[in-house]
Image (tube, rainbow, N blue to C red; front, side, top):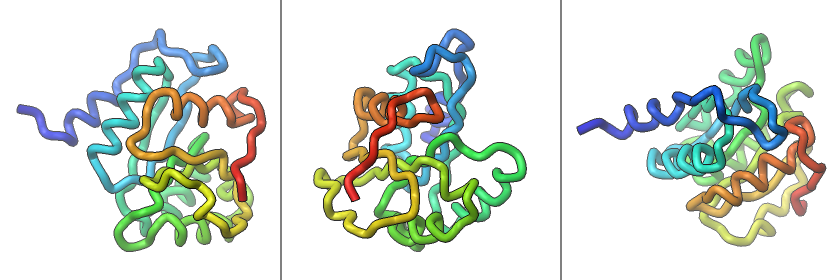
Length: 163
């Protein structure tokens, strides 16, 4: 029997016939900050069901987000960050503070908030970030497609999350 880590790794193997919402075959680079393997599998399932071509890196510890992004800034920053708000240690709110204070290339990355809260209005603080939306967990294919299609750099229409 395969372990959950192996299943996640298998989901990362994509066929070249997958296209993004723009019809482009270039993969969307996603950083998922999520401590739950189950929620990670649901995200991968949604991305695959939507036939989206993607590369996904997962961080399960908020303390690793800024070092990851600083290193990625020298190579290739993610196109979008899916951020769980309820992480052990450095939580999603602290990560939003860190990202707000980061240099422009990092703080300009679109961030999609993921939480079990169905009401996005609890996030009242005005962050100096591109918060592109809110996903209520468990995520599904339609909600992931909506978020990705709202990001201008991925060819989507500009949408702004309530602040």
